[in-house]
Amino acid sequence: MHPLWQSIDKQLLPRHVGIIMDGNGRWAQQRIMPRFQGHRSAVKAVRVTVETSAEIGLKALTLYAFSTENWKRPQTEVSILMDLLAEYLEKELNTMLTNNIQLRLIGDRAALPEFIHAPLDRALQNTAGNTGLVLNLAVNYGGRAEIIRAVQSIVSAYAKQPFEIGTIDDAMLQQHLYTPDLPDPDLIIRTSGEYRISNFLLWQSAYAEFYFTNVLWPDFTQEEFFKALLDFQNRQRRMGGV
Image (tube, rainbow, N blue to C red):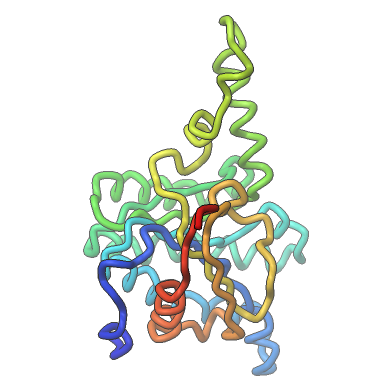
């Protein structure tokens, strides 16, 4: 464990951390490498962050792996990202089992390539009974699409029975999101020096603290993660109060 861990208040850890993993392409370009090398090198940062989150006792970690907008990228790059996802699911299953991690997918899996489904189902099923960290992989995910999906689900659920529109509230909508049983993220981290939310957990992040770092995602280490946690602990979270 990095020495910074000694400076962190273990009673004030965020319950749920979301990470917008950005900068893989620029990392590769800086090293005069093809972009896919940046995506491949990013797997180490994922592994370190997931294992650290499990070890320190976070309840949930949500990683923005592939957005609904990422389909616009060159087909070669999309194919490589899908290959890496399948490889990750297969290679990291034992790590998830060893660390008592429960894997979940948030996003529309219907559009994912067929070869993703078997390793995905295997990882989801084999980790379903784990009681430690909940690892949400946001794949083919968009915050707006999630909210639309939730509204459609509510309309569908009440289509054939009397229903008062006024009964739709925060709690009802929350139950139809991808994360109904999880606390909203307390902290959202974005790497690579960009300052935008990029359609990530739009509903859930209403009162999240944001941490932006210039570090490119493949260079994101346990030390960088602990820096974000320390920064979070120095915030005053009023949630609209005083």
